[in-house]
Amino acid sequence: MVNGQKIWTSNAQNSEWMFCLVRTEPDAPKHQGISYLLLRMDTPGIDARPMKQMNGDSSFNEVFFTDVRVPKNQIVGKRGDGWFVANTTLKHERGGLGDPNAAETRFRSIVELMKKETVNGDSLMDHPTYRDRLLKLQARMLSMKFNGMRIMSHAIREENPGLAGWIVKLQGCELNHQMASMAVDIMGELGILFEEGPYLRDGGIWQHMYMTDLGLIIGGGTAQIQKNIIGERALGLPKEPKQEQPA
Image 1 (tube, rainbow, N blue to C red):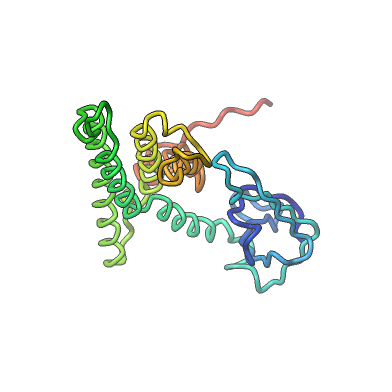
Image 2: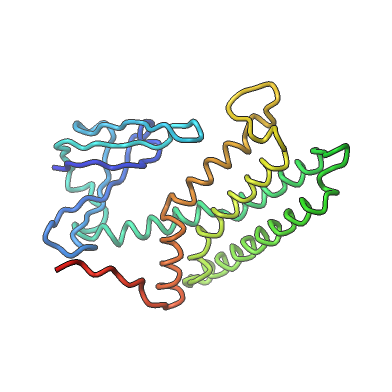
């Protein structure tokens, strides 16, 4: 039986299934003895409670498990090998969070926004400070696009992309947040509006993205964790020293 609590479960209140990592061998070492389970959300003992986020949505949930019985055929892989399965899952999740195609679409929307917005009657596209900031974002967007092509080439050849794959989540999520931040700045005082109002531009999508993307820098492994992973696994740097425990 599963007993415990899990937080930050995406769309649990609307889902029919979820996956969950549970410790099934309590005496096993830290990253062993964990099993990867598939659970039906209508299983007795599962309670999903939506959480209010700073962007106004409730897409994350806190899930409680009370004496939840799980059939043996709902274990993915072998019992106790869940950490390996979880890392594979995270690899695909991180790649999706930093999708370069989505970043390019967002960048084009910012270009159109700069053409429409004006300061003292002049288009922001003609403003050197904003144009310089836009070009810096374009350079980062294109570098992520070409990096995505590199990853695709590795996939076609059935090769490990190495460092090219590790940086996608870290760089992609930070780039998305920076683009949303610029869009908010472009709108000037109207950029601070949120939710509803007669002066809200584009339904407040940029403000919503700004809040959401800030959370995604944390989701799927924080930026700090991503940097440690890149340093240790991709660059071969030594692990960060651990603080000694008192005797």
